[in-house]
Structures are given as C-alpha cells and as structure tokens.
Image (cartoon, rainbow, N blue to C red; front, side, top):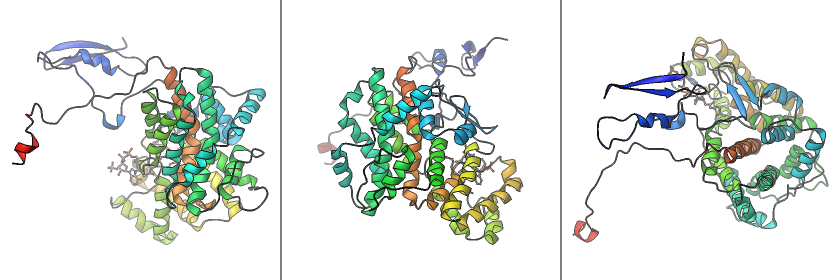
Length: 430
Ligand code: ACO
C-alpha cells in the first residue's frame, strides 16, 4: 500500500497521484488537476469555516474529541489542572517543556515585574464611554500596546519576541481588571507585585480602600484552574485569527488584539452567558422535563451541551464541575447549580442526547462560577481572554518560526459580474 491518493478527473478521464502525509493531502497538489478549458484554473478545495482543512503543523495542543482527550504539550489537562498552576502552564505552552525550579522562578519574576502599564494606557482607557463593553476595551488596549512597544515589530529576533510575550501575559490582567472597573466608575487599582498572578488580578478587580486585598485562597485556586482550562484549544476561531493576522508579520499585540476580537463573538466566547440565561428561564427543577421536551422538539438548544470537536464529555467540564463545588463552599451555593446538575443528569440519560453524543462542554458550569465571583456576564469573555493569552502567543511563536507558513490568503469562488462597461454618473443619472 502506498501513501497516496489516485484521483480520476471524470471531465478528462485523466488520473493523478497525490501524496498523503500525516493523513492529509496538500491542497496545492490538486492545482495540477485541470479541466478541458485552455485557461481553466487548477482544482481547489471549497471549505467555508475550515471544517476539514489543516492550516498548520502544531506541537502545542492535542485534542481527541471522540475520546474526550485534551493535552498541552503532551500533558493531560486533568493532571495540569490538579497539580500545576497557570504560570507553569503558560511556561509549558510557550517553551514546550516544563521549567526547572530556576526557570520557573525567573519566569514568574519576569511576568510579575511587567504587570504595570504606561500611565498613558490608563488615560487611554479612561477615555472610553462609561458603559463601554470590557471586551471592546480589552481588544483596543491590547492593540494600543503596539504603539507603546514599536520594537515589537522586530519579530525575527528571539529575545525581542520573548520580551513581548512576557509583557503581554503580564499586562492582560491589568487591562482586563481596568476594563471591569471602568464600567463601575471605580478607580483603577495598580498591580500588587507581592501577590501571585491570579491573586493580583483579583486585587485589581475588587480592592477598595483596604491596604492589601487578600482573596480567599480557594477562590484564587479556582480562578487559576479556570485559566489553565482555557489556556489553549488548538486551531479554534480566535487562535486562527491570531495566526491569520500574525502571518502578515505584524507585531504580536496587533495579532492578539485580533484574537480578542474573535473571542468577543457569541459563537465563540459567549456561550456561558447563554447557559445562565437558560437556567434562569427554566427557574426550577420541576420545569426541566418540559424544557427537555422543547429541546427534543427542536424548539431550542440545551446551551452548554454539544461541541464541534468533543463527542464525549468535554474533559474541561469535568474539572470545572469540581471547581464549582470548591467555589460554592466559599461563596454559598447558587440555586441555579441544582437546576444545572439535574438538567445534566436527565440529559445524559435521555436517548436524544445519548444518540447525538451531546455532553456538557466547558461552558455548562463556568458561568455559574463566574457569577459566584460576582462578575457581570460581560466579564466572562475577558476572563477567557486572559486565560487564552499564553495559548495565542505559543501558537503565534510557532507560526513565526515555521518555514512552511505563508501569509494567510484564501482563494474564493467568484460569483459576481464580469467586464461591465462603466457609465459615468452624469450619464447614468441624466
Ligand atoms: N441542544 C440540542 N440539540 C443539539 C445541541 C444542543 N446543545 N447541540 C447539537 N444538537 C443536535 C443538533 O440539533 C443536531 O441534531 P440533528 O442531527 O437531529 O439535526 C445534532 O445534535 C448535531 O448538531 P450540530 O449542530 O450539527 O453540531 P455542531 O458540531 O455543528 O455544533 C455546537 C456544535 C455549536 C457547540 C452545538 O452543539 C451547540 O449549539 N451547542 C450549544 C451552544 C454551546 O454550548 N456552545 C459552546 C461550545 S464550547 C465553546 O465554544 C468554548
């Protein structure tokens, strides 16, 4: 058996042999297949949404959706969530291997001492309307960092790349927290570099007049785990946006700002908010059977269930469920949790969901946790973005060093008019 594909073009009767590598064929290899017309272009693939197109080789994240497996750099997400922390996971994603003690300490030190932003960033953020969406503020302020660090354009220098990566991971919580405080009319809180990454973020979010803000350690840990769970998910919409924009060799702040924009969309980062709305609408366990009937009749969707890739329990949902219990121990339970647990139990036993392999995804429980922290729904996606930043940057780093990559420039199937004769306005409107 040879690793190739024989393609017979029934238009011409001609056969072509296309090599298969890593379970893929090169789309460019199809370009040799031409129809009968003289100037006819070679065959191309049509794949809106890239549902069956690999855009890169990547060694960052592995997913097996049928088995419910998610690994960062080969390490299962369950082990990282249980035994690691977000800073170490960020190091792992960026560097490709786990740090030694000295490497870890140096990494944490670097990130910690880049948490402050230029005072002009503060004035810039203060200029937003009082009701500006925090994701819009985050997207704009990450993009604005490119103007503060023009050296970031030198993406071919490894040391320079490292500097921007450190800056961005360090400053995202500051920008995220300030986006949150702005809408509340509260003063921006400067970073406290005596605190851990996640404890400092909570301080910048919630500190008022107290000298030091001390968050409950269980809450700090729960948020840290949520950051770990969101840190990367291979070629999703926002990562693809970062790679696509980064392929023009622009600076990484501009590329990540595009990723934040993609994540802002309701099809990507916004489903956990929809879960909360759904649970509120159901209102009580007694209303679940009628709701499930509505879902089965196709009247609505069970939000937080189903996934394009996972056809099994999303491994992140299992971990989040456990985190929810830890958080509620501190904050007191949310009555919506009882509805969610019962809904999950009923759905997992129902033939409709079993047959379609619909299981809870990462968003089924995350909104409940964020609400327990007293985050408004607009902040949910900001939290996602802070967690995803090391993943975006690891993917960007891989992209800029990958010799096979080119500027992202898809083809199109043109459906418009051709060769019309332009009639000047003076004649058309006469
Ligand atoms: N509730 C009810 N039925 C569902 C659901 C759901 N949540 N999800 C899928 N189905 C059904 C579909 O109606 C379809 O049934 P059919 O074969 O009888 O027509 C079948 O399951 C397959 O569904 P598709 O829509 O083809 O699956 P796809 O992979 O395109 O969609 C998606 C995945 C968008 C996540 C979908 O499951 C969904 O809308 N879920 C709810 C929203 C949600 O939770 N999104 C968060 C995803 S995680 C993330 O983005 C971070």
